[in-house]
Length: 262
Image 1 (cartoon, rainbow, N blue to C red):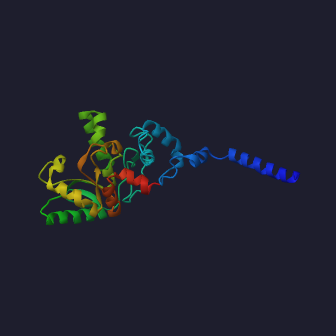
Image 2 (cartoon, helix red, strand yellow; image 1 turned 30 degrees about the vertical axis):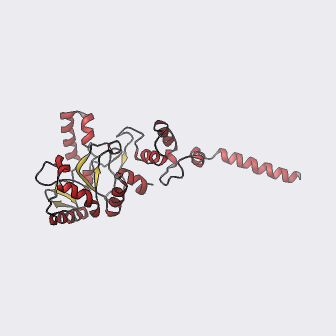
């Protein structure tokens, strides 16, 4: 009997000692109200809790998603180098940046700008289908280099100040245009900023996803994207992702943390 008691005491003490050396995150994860969510990350456990305290009415799925994007911190705070370079999955936003020397491979001419070759092919397919419906979609700005974006952004800052410029223009390195996957469009008649009022825009709302394009900065998503609504700015993400994003009315930032970076 004494031997049995000693064995029980030994294993009990061993468990207590071993448990004391477990990482704090493991203990938190075990009892977390968020850890059942598919895109939960243990390293963000404390951030989820703090964000939840600020937005108690948000669903836990939204808490995890938004913290993973980085929305618990100010835009441009603790930004990281973008991953999945030279793929359709790369995410460039106010938390993920490209280096000055990054240039996508296989850029080709489309209208008066450039896009990655497979993006250009899908854009031309979309453009040609629109033509068959007596509509005209023109690519007016695709790939932009780091230096070009720097000049453009600084011009806007000079005119409107940094705070306002940040709502409609990306800082150099943080622009999707540098990926060669993004394109601004017009109908060749109206100013691009009036694209929302055109028949071409209505057609793209119903058809762009079929070619792998999404409206990148939609209405009511400014708090996620950090940019004002831009009816003219589209991003290639592939048909599967574009279809899901359209159906569920989410941004690529959200899709990325749900399915790509998890």
